[in-house]
Image (cartoon, rainbow over all chains, first blue to last red; front, side, top):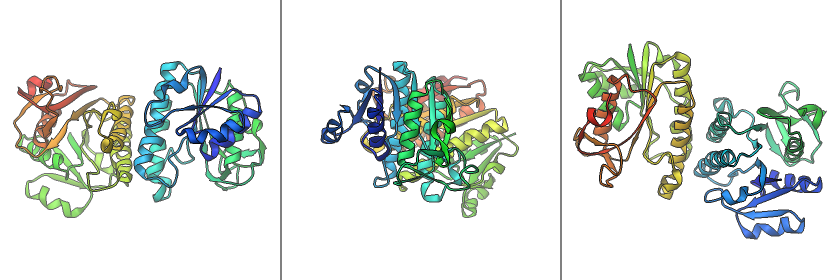
Length: 211
Length: 211
């Protein structure tokens, strides 16, 4: 059985797909545009063309886990935050429920549980993440919610902290570390209905996340 | 015990406050700006100044029902849709739950249950309403969700339809009719955890909504 990766062409998505494929985990990268296929094809990674804003239920065929790391990104407006980060996540949760997917790994954000504590510019995004996470929690879908801090392009240290206390107040994490955390969680199937803040830290990933 | 009206200064909100006050229902109109107070003061309607994007829990003191008819409106962007229509509703639901409010009457929208069926321009708004409604349904707060069609400024006919079949496919409703429906529901306390599509129609309000 495969893992469907939604948001595969994003910055975390590509790193995760590459790691998972090298680790021998069967994955299917969901891409919107056939032009995005070459990058995955060169690496031998299976793709499926599907639109998170349209019909994408065929992408679930033969998949028993789902990674959701889609994000509308900083260059689109809050209308896309509503359609991708909020409603794309909701439809993914609904489809995961209908298909009886064994687990959904959701990339959310630190502070999503308290949008008012976020800087004003980030609040609309955090509100979308709050609502998507709440929808997932109240669904019947077994899940893990990942809450990375501010994303950086540093090289993955493969060392994590899971709270601001532990990280000494540093609120950053490399996208590579998020990808490594996703790979660990993909394999740690006993971790169900759990939530983790993710920050760069000092603990090996398996020690930080367990499983 | 009073009914807190969130979104009181909106187009539906003002009509509802006026109707409810004339009917002798104790209400408290929540307004953002003290400058909005005059309109309510002239009519003898109690107000409380509170910010739906900030702190508004004091507005709930002494209230056992809540009407949520706030909307960011057509002149603001989807960032406000996220902060008002989605997250303002979520925080209202959370406060209603904490305070043990007996009922929350939520003004949502027809088609909120299927944003993809809405015209493209309306989809982000419908996604916000979908998520707010889902949050309310999965909460412990007794509620009624109202789903009006396209709002007009026609004079209230005080006659409703509750489906497109019944309205002959006409998808409109006057804001005045929504206000009258809210007033009926405010008094019809036996109606709990119900949802109604609201359209202009031919049935008297009590026949259309029951209670």
